[in-house]
Amino acid sequence: MSSHRFDARDAQDFADLVQAHPLAWISSRGPDGPHATPLPLLVEYGADGRPVAIEGHFARANPQVAALRQDPEALVLWLGAQGYVSPSWMQDRTQAPSWNYASAQCRVRVAFVDDQALHQHLDLLSRQHEGARPCAWASAEMGPRLHELARRVVGFRAEVLELRQRYKLGQDERDDVYADILTGLRTGGAGELQDWMCRFNPGRGPAATTIDPHAAADPGDEP
Image 1: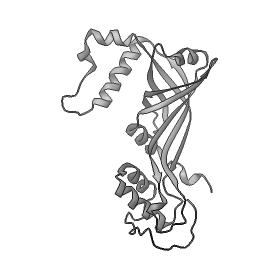
Image 2 (image 1 turned 135 degrees about the horizontal axis):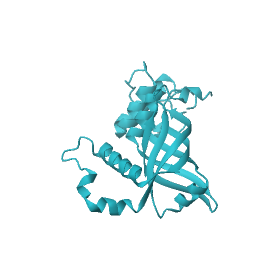
Image 3 (image 1 turned 90 degrees about the vertical axis):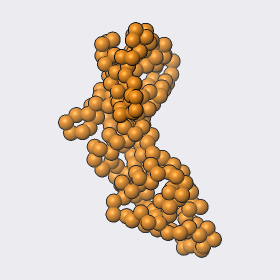
Image 4 (image 1 turned 180 degrees about the horizontal axis):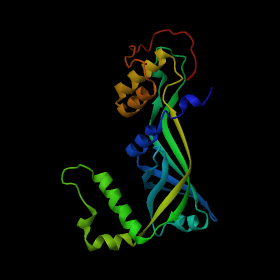
């Protein structure tokens, strides 16, 4: 099976994935072994819509900070909409279990920033997540406490060296199997994964067949 069918369609796919799932793992290796930390991140994009830099902040006491000062290369990993695909949804009972998902990773080079850049990052991060909430909070409301807490973290800006993406969302399924998956997801309330499947399968109808777990089926392609 060729992998290109699971590639991104355009730059917006990555942007929408990380906007919906801003908490990512940043993984690196130091003298004492591997490190990984989940962090809320901000992505900076170039004129072509591709990511050029990633901003975030570590707790200053995190040992990964010292490791990255020695070796600044790291891997940032996002897992977007995802879910188990059950053969119990299928009329074709020869189908095997599978897992559908949207994912992305960036190989980056981390550089730590000064206090001014850190404060700008923390303000932008809070504004992005507060957005248009009723009674939205602003970091300035913390007063002097903001500076006290900021001393406990260290900010970074990571240059994006490489972007890889994989969107396994039913592109390789027969139409009848694809339709049954959508029905199963809709019944189970997995609306986000269903939406991403429809996004990557334009022109394939969302209407699915009725699932009859006792119906006989002909052997079909494996997912």
